[in-house]
Length: 220
Image (cartoon, rainbow, N blue to C red; front, top):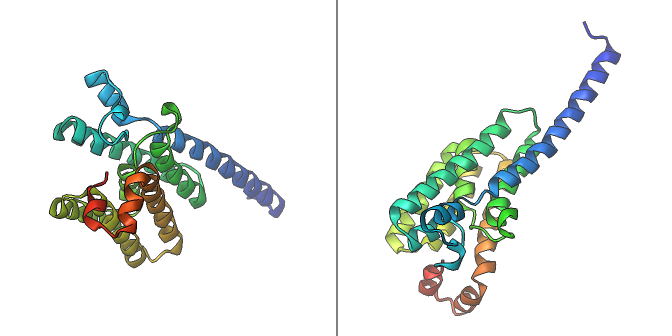
């Protein structure tokens, strides 16, 4: 049996170990998120840099536009699996909830700003989808269906992403009833949207000023 002093020492040691694992997981999540699936796929199949084609992003959508649907689907699935494994790892090791949330956010940042490609990657949609599918499954599925439907109906991935982000945050608030998870979703959604805006600001800002919804929707 532990006496009070031993229990305090044990709890202090365990807390320090958790904090240490938090740091390790956060670094791991960023580096794993930074693995440039689209770049590697295009390099292997075409021996070219995907960032020199289409929108210039290293993501599944640009692979679809620059190559074909089959290739885009492969990259998307790999990115989803990669992000899902990052979330699964976080849920199955001794880390705090704070470490899990920060780590998964950094996996999105890693996808968008990968250290391996001088910080020019994708937009983070597939990574957000992958981590949320593991941590908040129902809101993630609803958001994914929304993105697919809006994109098909309006033929605009951007409006699909915007609507999907709104639905993800709303569904998280309704189904999870957690302010922490809602803030987590909002942060990831803002990362995706600000990445998009920052890379296409020359096209987006004039369209936004003119409230040209059709033009905004065509910007990738």
